[in-house]
Length: 241
Length: 110
Image: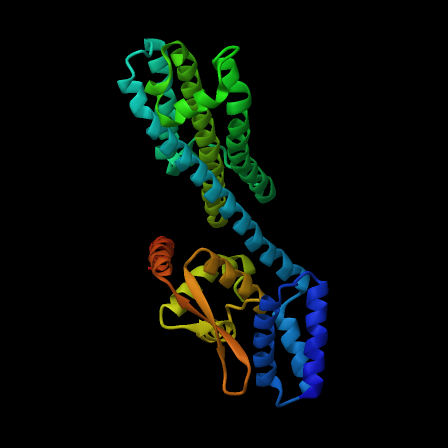
């Protein structure tokens, strides 16, 4: 069997050179190949091996099929990121929601702005599984992967950017000059009612910007999920047409 | 011989159906499909594995390596709960296609 082992080692090298690099995949294909060769080996070992290799198929074709699986793993990761952002944004918004009802100093306009942000965020979460109906079907798998990843990472990226904007730009601007960013950040976290009366309007602005930032993150996350779902459903139907 | 597009379209339904009878491995799946179809349904052997791996990623099937008596290893696949649901869905779809064709051909060949 030494000869067969050598032939198989060479075949593994050829497959690896052709793009099938995963040792686990090669082990499984080798197990198949050996079984196939064993069936034919009664006649002629070399011939049996060549026939089994032919039946296994060309590495270039297999590479394309295995690449599709890797691609779908990336897309699934993007979808999970999209869902996570959407859920995080919705939970954060819900945590801030009671302030809109119980802080009497809020103006009607501020309350309406806050409520609409929360409603949009929750809508983005609730319609996560339905938004594929209004999103376009991107038929090119490659472009779709990029579009889904871009939306998902835009959502995460936006949350990260906002986390930086909040203490460095939004809080100082909202509180005008001379206000202490530290105390305001604390007041946002602890509760709006702890802010001094003069600072209330600034705190409200910060709270509203938080709510709308969450809305944007939720919508982007929802788009990431929906684009993949739309593409998957659209192209699935094509397969049977 | 059945064209490769139809073989590819039916691959998931065939694998799910075979695995619903018990766990199996790539080589045996190919041999069984070949035998049951009297050699009309033939995959390029290697092409079965990306399909199996995709189905595993979908959470339909799971796999485990088993060491054989001769020291070699085989990767066995078996159906998961989601796979049973997927099989039900695919069975319904294929039966619909089958029923339409049977009705149409029944009219013609009655």
